[in-house]
Image (cartoon, rainbow, N blue to C red; front, side, top):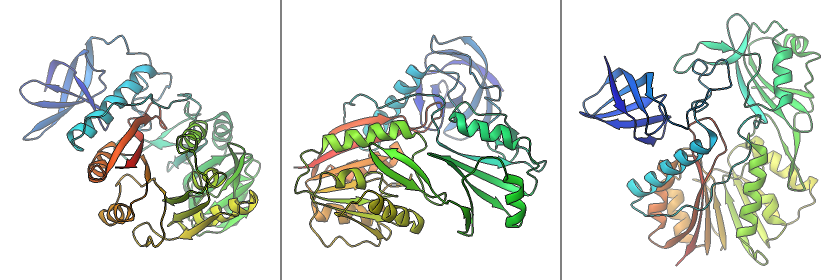
Length: 399
């Protein structure tokens, strides 16, 4: 069943909604254009469909540069100009804060950087035939790629080289780049067989799910003048250039930091902790992932930082027994567990910084904090251009 309809507002998940006899979630539309939509699912309260024909195109509709866009499930917005992608994500953020958070907000300017060749890491799937690529959306079928326009040049060089190898028996290859390149391999093949396959590709180290590795098991990145090392079992922001901008903004916005005690929950390998320690009195970095906490300890030593300590614990289990002036929160998509939100509220820091990767859970958590905190600023961060993902940064102060 198909119908012609005008697309209206963007919503999270890569959809634009339209209202006719009911609500329709449309994939492949730009707000304000008239499209023909094929309905694939019809629920009691809404329908889901995809664009089959554009009747009146938006001036923001462009030709996607990637030959497998629409087949590969990695990107969602390549057919929309980058300017409009950013404004759509801002609309989604504002809608979430208003509808879920029951708050009215004005956004500070979005933080953006390049929208192609920005990813310093990528997770590639391997097909049964041994081809490297990404999953087709909604399936486990691998779409082979020669390169990906979102990846930096070095990762694309490695992908082209891997296309010349027989990769059968390998399930996934996670590639990370900094001063060198390393890989996390998911496979049941013997270590020596994997090493033979990867020989000459250019990896400085190869890591395995078991926690074992060959060669150097970390890469080194520049974090605004600091040495930042991370292993494949840990995490770092793929859009590293934008990450550096975000870190700089947070450090500057929190000044003066002299004599301030900072608690960094969900600290990773010290992405925020290390730069803040250069200005603050003390920084406590809490991180559940053992590998990330170990990376953080290495980074503390490499940078000769004396006032930052890493605590290998989940945010849920960590007990706040000290007085902190500032708390940083960078939770996963599920947002803050209610126990964590309560602990932070009970500790009454003067300032809270919340970095979010889900506008809905951010809005929910801001509503909790709004009982005692003012939201001083809120902005969208576009860590994942050409995808539907919406990240945000909020600064709060105790009333």
